[in-house]
Length: 100
Image 1 (cartoon, rainbow, N blue to C red):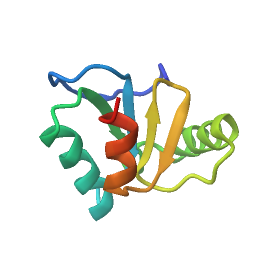
Image 2: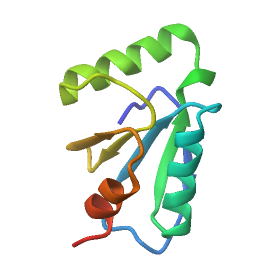
Image 3: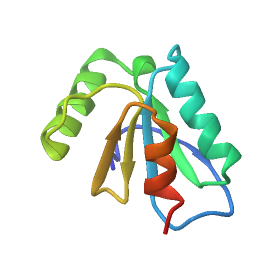
């Protein structure tokens, strides 16, 4: 979504969606969210926003806020560049990513 940052890519057998996670390196919910994706075999890419320079972090947060019309909190999941889920609620992520 943002071509000026470097994402970490995790490959998995489930590739039905383009999944991006904006997370914090120190966030327990973020760690559980990324572990959920990995355990479910969902291909995704993520970035730890708190490890980016302040200017870039603010730019990403503002872009996410304006594109999805939501307050930005972490983890912030973007599905296919069209849908966003804020926070990690496993049932919501499961429904959005696995229930087809």
